[in-house]
Image 1 (cartoon, rainbow, N blue to C red):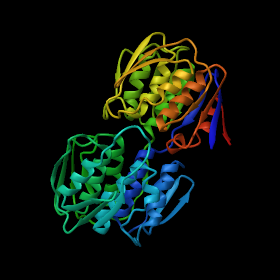
Image 2: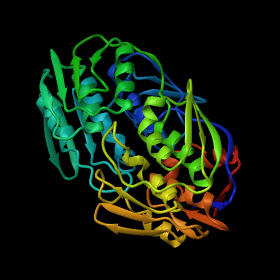
Image 3: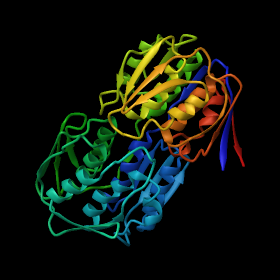
Image 4: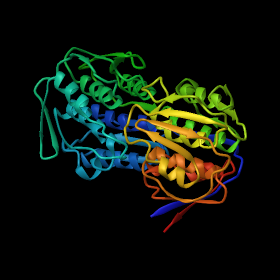
Length: 418
């Protein structure tokens, strides 16, 4: 099992590039099933989750080539509507293939998905949205069976602005007769990226980035050539690495509007941040200021995926900060590990109260989930002495060669295989 060994204390300096967004690549790979023509998807990071999604495509009959950061999907010969268990149980986002497969094959079979243990992420909104479009759904023995006789556009209101449910409904609606309206839709930038890909295929999706999305179904779809948007959470993590080390770096390939909620919080810590084109420059204080209160919310609020890295930064702030997690109930699993490093944090339900300390100390800690693992990396960059982070597979689900990227801006971090 791989581990990171980090010697903290280095001030990060230099420039670093952000790859394409994992959370855009995954639904767009699924959307490649909507046509029988070849699609080219560019700037895809080399991640375990994407590898699993490619495995799903190959298992259902697609021919897939990977050339550097480009994935070429030929879905002309789909051989099955069954999405294999071996992939689905490992990545939560595999559920996104449900809507695409129903649109393409008229039916789909999938087991309940796995992924990080950060709390319940029920898929009832996905299933209800598909049912509203005319999909018959049966659940038995841990499997979901979907069949449709005639997909028909519908007016769908989501009880919660779920990203995955919004994406699944959009993809299924491309094959529905008439128009579909999705109300209280998720507004995340990855939804807009999916819209742009489907429209490049000849589809008609409008309203992504707002709470109301409209899809005109039954338009002929063709292959498309598409470049993935930059990963806003990876960008935020790099900016956070500078903030916790008192560093000064340039983060390249960033859409400023996508990271604005993150930048607003980092500015509260005292960091000076400015944008120039697609680059963001950050210059941080040696010790950050505390942040009175941060509450995670759906976009455009502060993203839950940045909660753990922010908590790490605030562990060395000059005062007390409060962070409230409203999205996932188990997303403070990194806190006991930070406390092993000397952090002073109290948890009360959904709230973390962080009393900043002058120093963190290196320790052996465990990565329980993707973003919590990133938080431990940030803490290790600041801590005195050596930090060992065990069980890297969660981190590698969302960060491509993180150790290589951080070393390029001055971090002392190595990946070691046991």
